[in-house]
Length: 324
Image 1 (cartoon, rainbow, N blue to C red):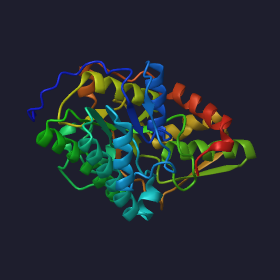
Image 2: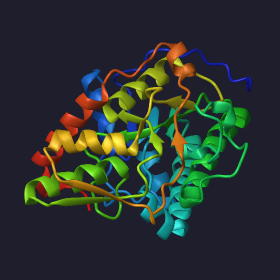
Image 3: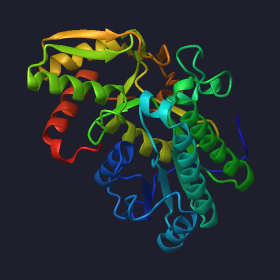
Image 4: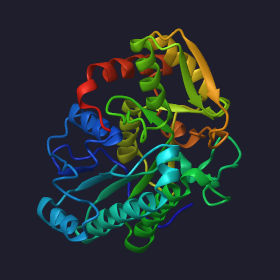
């Protein structure tokens, strides 16, 4: 698949302005740490209170002032099954506004290299496993997060449109389920892994006899440490160009029940576990085919047990500053 963009990937200029949209979030924060650790000297970030990315005029003014050479678009309204099911209007509208404003401003002000961050939920609910990049738009989405998925699909198409119409070497990366330092551990807004960490840690600390989880525990999920994701982002910016979105993951998965058991071991919970089968499971399996990025020269490094232990340690040491 080619769109005629003439660009040879190369090392990024460490002194050029690099705007990380969403630098206080899970992915943006990890990317900021990775860029800083790799010698980038001109990182640009704004909190949501400093710059509302849904305010089109403010975004254009920001780009006119800062003139970033590179942009990583990691800002998004995100949440788990409950949040996505309850607020589909916000998940669609807010994400479309953020993406459109940032990309239009990036076009207006000549941004050289832009990386758009999506999600594995862009793929059809019942797509063959593992999920290949080519499965995009081949079937119905998972209903519990279809609004968010549609927004992310629109972002991918916006990147492809910028490539076709303006010859911009912009790219998209689709991570699998992410976890790690800076995650959202909110009881109502978190994804499955941080939700489980919070639930089991609280049970271990309070001496609870029972932990109850949603669903059957049978769905299979792939988990990638956010530091690996950040490394992958920098790798792609310096080594990949093409119109297709690129899957980023480990290439292996576990059941929700298995991940829950591992978290229980890590936090020291030894009580009973019950599964509320009246609650939704979501997609039965989401495993990414990561052949494209692996063949380009990148593979994940952080093992799941190792990543969980460090994430629990971070969670326990940041109790007073957690989101939500």
